[in-house]
Structure formats: C-alpha cells, structure tokens
Length: 437
Image (cartoon, rainbow, N blue to C red; front, top):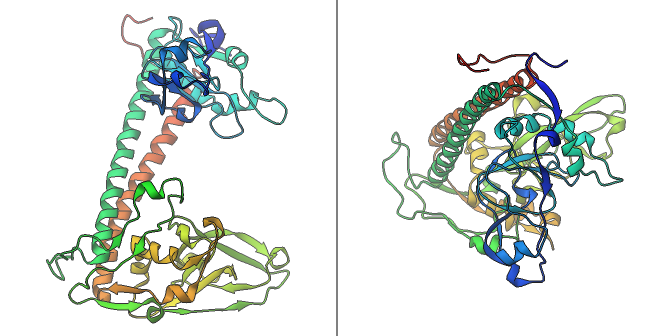
C-alpha cells in the first residue's frame, strides 16, 4: 500500500544508473594522476572524500572509467562478502571501477533520501543478486529496484532526522576513540611505573618507554595488527616495585575432566586481541571431539597456546566457573603477589605481548606454538598488590566509561534503524513546515 502523497517507482525511473571502469594496469601513464579512482573497498554507508588510487586524464579517456560528480551514489555489486549491496555517497568528483554501480543525482528524488533508502534495503538488495556460484548485483537490478518516495519537502524532513542521528553517532564514536587512546596511554604508563598514582608517589620514571618497537614499516604486511613482534625490554625498576618472573607468580593447573556422554558441559574460548574468556557454547560429552578436557575456575588465567601471539588469553569470570577447555590451553592459578585484575590489564601491555611473541616458534604466524616454560622465565616489574589494585580500579573506571558510550552508540543505531523502518515506508509521517507541499 502506497502512503497518501507518496509514489512508487523504480530507481531507474528517477535516476541514471551506470558504472565505471579500470584503465589498463600495463600502461604506467594511466596511473598516478590527479583523478580519484574509487573501488568498492571504500563503500561503507559513508561519504567518500578520498581515494587510495588516482588515475590520469589519459587513463580516464582510454578506458570505460567515468568522472562522476559529487553526491553520486555508489553501490557495491560483486562478491559474497558484506560489500555487495552497500552504498556510499561521493563527497568529491571521482572515477570508479566497474564493481560499483553509480547512481547520478536527479531532480526527482533527493540524493540523500535515496542514500538512506538504499542503506535501509541493504539485505533486500543482497537477496536479489544471483549468478551461479558467485552472487552479484548488476546495473539492471539496481535500476529495477522499487523506490517509494514522498514529496521533496517531506524527503528533506526525513533526511534531516537521519542526518541528526548520524551526527550523534559520529560524535559518540569519536569520543569513544579518544577515550580509548587516552586509556591505552594511561595503561601503558601505569603498568610500567612511568607515572604513579598520587597515593603512592608523584615520581616519574626517567625512561619514557619499556620496549624497543619494531618499525611500523617493517611490520606492515608481515604481521597482523594483533601481533606485537618487538623485542621485550624492561625499563629501570621503579621505586618500591619488584621484579618477578611469571614462574614465581603463576602455577600451572590441570583439572582433568572425565567426560560423561550424557552430561552437558560449558565450553569457553580465549578471544584474540585480548578479548578475554568467553562462552563457546554447551555440548554433551558425546558431542565433544577432543577427549582431553580440563576444568577452569573463576580467577584462573587461561592462555590459548596456538593463539596467544594474537592476544588470546584472559581471566576466567565468575559466570564461567566450572567450564572446560581442551589441552590446547594452558591454565594457571595466580598467587597472592599478583592481583588477577591487574594481570588482565598487564596482558594488554606491549611488553607482555612481545614476551608471548618471542616465546612462540613456527614457520608462519598462524602456525606458531607457544612455549609455556620459556615464557614463564620472562621477568616482569610489579608494584605492591595494594598499588596493583589501585591501578586496576583506575583503568577499570576508564573501561566502564567507554562501555557506557558504546551502549549509547548501540542504542542510537537501534533508534535510527527503527526510525528508518517507520519513516522510509510512510508508517510515520513527518510534520512539514507551513507552505510546504
């Protein structure tokens, strides 16, 4: 049913839909010019203001590439990944490759309205595409896609609502990013004694860093971002701190579980990027393929020996007490000299990550195996337990602030999705200014 005052057409009835092209890679003169050349990798429900590659006037003239104006909409056409069906708007004049459908601006439909309309129908667009084993969209499918639109004044009012929501989401995400960077810097300083909490001392360690970093240019393309291959190096020990090896702080614990076929067990996994210990699901004993299983308890420190160079480790939360892990994991209890919360934060430090890298062996990153006994010999600098707990409280407060902001962003995105469902279908109508038709 078409809402009163709205019309049902197709995108191709109101807008020109075309595509771009790729100049020959064999002709050097076609590349490295001043014309931005956009590919589907840049399309992510966003406004595109720059490109990774540029072509020359000759490249444009001697290929099917076209120069599209600002506000042209780009829709990803190819692939089984998430890019197919995504939409973006050009914030600059640019050419594109043939994997993008380009929807040119028209006088019939506000381009920003069409942007939100296509974004809202992302999943529906993806379901339309089918070409053998490789699912693709096409210019024809985009042209024939149904378009429901109100008058231009109502389109403008609808767009203004979504723009306001996007602005709130963007500002919140920027605040999250800033707070994450601040927390990361503070954590690095507190965990090395570079700065001390006022209750303990106001002194600042002279040396500003506790690691020798591998140059970014050397790491780029060699290791994933989750891997820290730099050489571990301790700074001078801060006043009042102790130097202890992990062997002095942790004790390997093996609580072997005799699986019963009919009993249901909670399985856990150590997430990459210091993501902690999380539920992996529930299985009956007969469904568990690996017979060697071990129980973990709340407060245990768990390491995935195959994934630790990617930061797969964490403290077992109370909610997962009694869960099980396979023999691919190392489980440790923590002694009285090390606060478990502090250890969780310590595992985020560069020094900790680098000790894990240098305790792993293998011909490729994804096949490296963690040598526990070697890692346990590494020394760590520790403040007194009271200071550990104070540091943990400070950093957990920062984490809680970030978590609240993330919840706010999630709620805003849910609200926006709900508004799109109502306003882009005419179920909820906006109030137009006096005199607008």
